[in-house]
Amino acid sequence: QSGERFWYGEGCQSLCICNGTTGFVRCSPSSCSEQETCRIVKGEYGCHLRPHATCSASGDPHYTSFDGQRFDFQGTCRYVLTTVCDRTQGLPYFQVIARNEAWQGLPVSITVEVYVNVSGHMVHISRNMHGTAEVSKKIIE
Image (cartoon, rainbow, N blue to C red; front, side):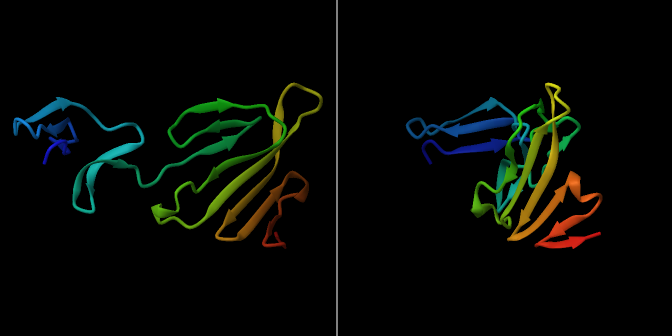
């Protein structure tokens, strides 16, 4: 079909396009992005988003995003670290929020609270809670 695109070769080495006028298929070297893997999903071979990824936050605070990029961010507010953007992905609703404060008058900040919401169940972890966590308003030791 004219304009139809498809991946070809082991590991999605080429992206091919059908020319409806000439009836020829032209393939060009290509590859999947860092956020994709070459595999079959619902019968379609090609580059598809990775099914799982990891992000992290640590230190004063250092962040690593789902695509592996590192950030050092010294803001002193509440920040959404991750949330569901597209409900059609089949994931339950989730959101992770961190609250940062300035640290001892220095030009750095630290994370003092983290809120994790999964399908309406809220987990609250705070520096002031001394090793405990609050799950849906109940303190867990």
